[in-house]
Length: 276
DNA sequence: GTGCTTGTTGGCCA
DNA sequence: GTGGCCAACAAGCA
Image (tube, rainbow, N blue to C red; front, side, top):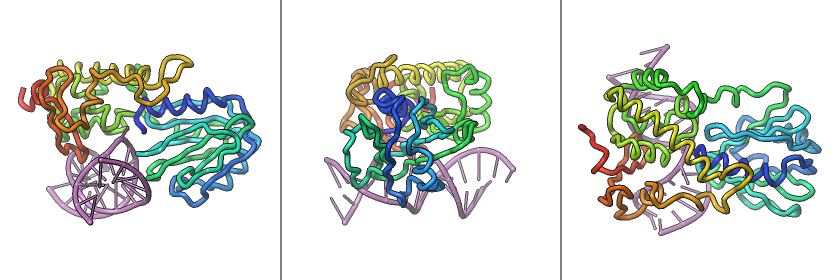
């Protein structure tokens, strides 16, 4: 599942297993909704006999580059996963795309089909990739840019604002809650109500959580944890946010859970005050 | 059966 | 035109 760090985890899983390998067969569920806007026949034609050159992850998206100017984009949606199976693997009901290679079969699976596969055949990168907002840890995520964005969304709750991909690429429901929890900001605070010091805190925690999530979930260098959440410490809100009677790892007081910005939101009332 | 779920989009309304 | 809210999409799980 699919926020910033999970996209990187799955990118590495395919990349470490098969970068440099040649695709000998492409198996697709041609009519699956994940191919909306993409012609499966074109994907099949260009990827067959193409070599997997390299890959990148940005926001919640993954880009795989193949020889012959082919670009394969994957958005994992709500329930998408990338797996590595044996060469003779037979795709199952929810395995919408499988790239067969000599040593492995790379599988994209997604039961709910909120995910998406995109394809581009051209020497230059596709706009659906280049248009992704600059990363939270890039120089472009300046205090001024953040303040301006909060001002423009002044009437929206912080939680809803953090989910806006145009400024917070890769932040999803649990990362947004993790950021606000660390920053000590109530998810229902209106974006326009923050003091300059609170804006600085929010920016710091956005960058901190993004960086920490990447190394914790997707590993450093060429290492990859055995499971998605294998290395997430108990000190994160992550493990407690869905628990019945969950408690804050910092204060050990009961957590609150409520719909904010249309999503189930978890916070610690003891340290995230609506009226500070 | 009910009521959730790590996401995005288009339509409606102010 | 802009911003905010919400239903819809689909399948599985408790």
